Image (cartoon, one colour):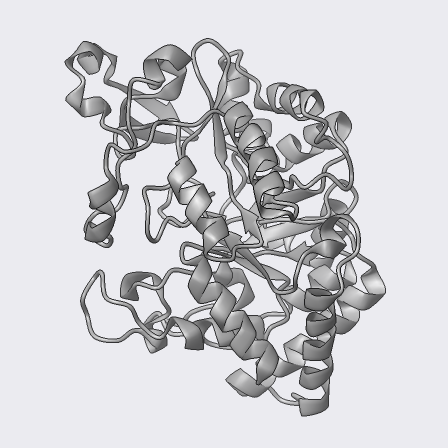
Length: 402
């Protein structure tokens, strides 16, 4: 997940506004205790944890079967393997992720859907080492940003299959470079088959959380994503309300289009408060994310989606030093609208943690990730995207057992 920045992304289905509102209010109270907000009640915090523990132990159908807080493997287990590879997805399941974000969906020249963080693949594949593709390196404007590199829409699927994945941020994850070249770029259809295979092998339902990437950009190229994604979901019988596939996008109109095509739970991703979704920019809609997270904006989102995937900064802002301040009312407001929240992205390394949870200055050293998880969980979020699913699973256990 993620826009053009380095972080990534979200989820949802309405599971009962009453229970969510209670859980949100109680957990927001717990957040107050952690961060010094007035009126934080220990009884409320304990009640919220009991609700979450009940959800962990007693599943229902569809989204209700997922543990709360839900641990979502961001692009797989990308803290340990090159992202958006079957190796990364597999490890996420092995480490206990409840859902695997498989994957960020972009099209090929011949209309197939593949899993890459961005259509520009210079940083996530070995394409630069292929002299036969040297002439494909171009500069394009993607959602208003000029980028130079190689783009999936300029390759056929057969050509992309000759490439191999590499680590995207080697400075932070030098250990991941050990696996450079091991895995190819998976198609979304291969992921759907892998999901079925893993469900059979593990004896429990495996969930995935794909994202439509830059849908306005691709629609202008004649490569509309939503119809292609819907066709594949229908082909594999995974286009229903209780299907184990949650679809997300940073563009609300993409989610609205999907809402007309499939029955899957849908999530609107939300970047920084002052930004505008690209589809809003192209249609002249003046609203920003700050408008969408107001109660009226959340109620509108709830008319066609089941959840939101906000950046963590919308849940707890940071001060000028990068340290966490106090929680906003977003969790309570979203729950009041019947929406769930799966914010993004937790990572173990120092540069990605709030300043008050860092240890030392090494770019690839781990900070106090457990402390950060505890603080975010206390706000009442329904889950979180993480590059390190094992850390998230342990942090959840700590939180529920406190």
